[in-house]
Image (cartoon, rainbow, N blue to C red; front, side, top):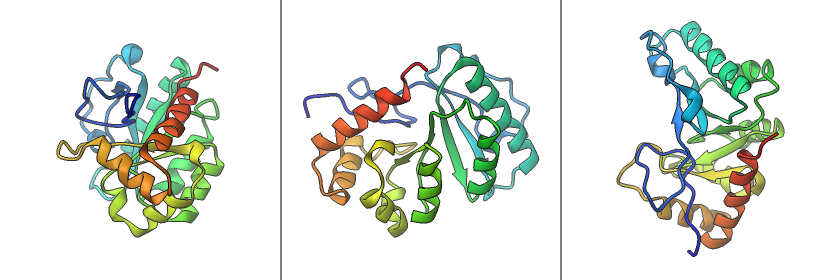
Length: 194
């Protein structure tokens, strides 16, 4: 590929791959009372959101999520969402913050109906290695609007972003190069100043 790949969410940045800097407190840490980071130097607020699979107080997660959204509003920055079994509550909370419209649901694993609801709100979906193991998510990848699509490696150091692009491109019946151009357009829109 002649252009650098984009990995929208990774814990293992590479110098040859574009990876936006994130700051935030993960919902798993919502009860720990951690000091908020300095959001001034980050590109994206997050990852933030709700995880109803973990034994973490849900009200604490919601308060933390709301705080992150207020920061994103104030600084006019995009948000990366962590969502596990909490789509309805996340969408309800996001609806209270209409100024936060540049939103990426990372590591999406879910049905076409869930994806369609998220995309209709103007939000994007990102897919990583775990997403590719889900038949439902593979269906979403194949048929979703290309203007709402991103790829990621998340916390997997053993999976390359090249592998993710290759698999996603196959599902979409395109080439990795064409997929990169689509994602590059989406990335530019995500970071456009409004």
